[in-house]
Image (cartoon, rainbow, N blue to C red; front, side):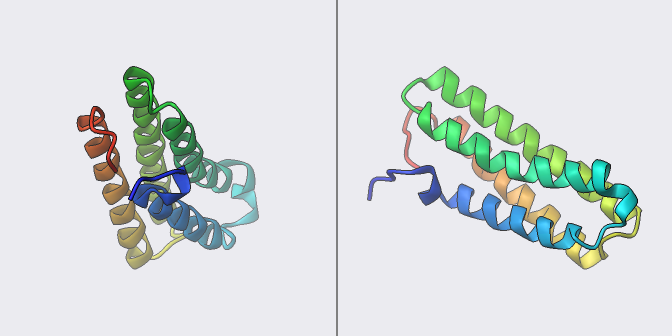
Length: 123
């Protein structure tokens, strides 16, 4: 089956669900974090999805495709850093942290695999 939209990519679905999970969790962050940690973790997790949409549209141009995948990787790794801070500040539990951190490791693995096999354009 040919994928016709970025929303059909497994990595997009995983990233979107993870970003929504972060959104729900971050609702309980303290008010003083609103313009720092809360915004940052939401922004970076959502940016994985928005960059995947751009990546998919640039799939005809291998170098642009790989470059956008690299942007996605950067945003996913940044999200992991914000999760580190969220745990250290006791805003999320260790169980929540482990689950989300592992989801973003899985996302990163899928992104790396897409880049390594960019010439195939099969996802």
